[in-house]
Image (cartoon, rainbow, N blue to C red; front, side, top):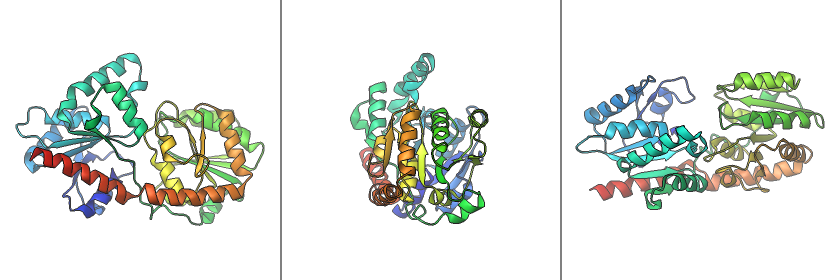
Length: 353
């Protein structure tokens, strides 16, 4: 969302971002630095519905763009009963609903179908996500679009990460880095077991960047595998570009679903090969065999073999890193994402005139 705001700022849109100040990576200062206004939302129960409704009535708007299905629920409920409602666009970032247990899945899909008439267009961040959404909901394909995620390829670019490696006493060890929220659908059991096998063959370190509910489980498994000296839990960081530049390989393990993981795009932009689980939009995020390696889900042996191959072949790492940088710059730029999103805005705004 922050990337999109940054990109749209150059397209002459007057933007207000409404979101909670919940200690996440994106702050009010970040939004304002991108040229948009910031309107804080509550984190308690259904209060955001009334806050969004009040924002529409008092400030007025031509278009509402919700990011994620939770935000879409609040936004759609806020639009109920309005005499003149703004154009409504929703972007899904990882369509997890089909993977929930039966009662929750049925409820959420029923809500999605019931509230969809309040939506002009659903944007999916990968073709795989669009297919999952259409199969699960039965929504007409012409009411959806695929717009691949975009990133700031100037902020994420190849460079020397030697200083950070030295600061974290990594030295010449083969450095595996993962950056993500420590929560489902991430699969740290597979990652840590594969890394445990890897470190017996080559000197290796694993940096885990991020935080979330899975952290206690991860720390317990690290201790059980006796790899505390090789695994560094870095928590939340604002220097992710530097972290990626320090990496020899980026890895992201998931189970179940995936939209189009931003960190895999950022790693490629940084010139780092990517090893990623073949679920959801991951196949669209990398070019398998060229910018990284796809591995089957929940397969620690396959993940170990992919990491070992890259650890033993610096030339392959360099070749994949160069190809990844080129792919990110040409296919996943911020400007391309903003341009395609602006075209959707204009198309649906025109239809309402």
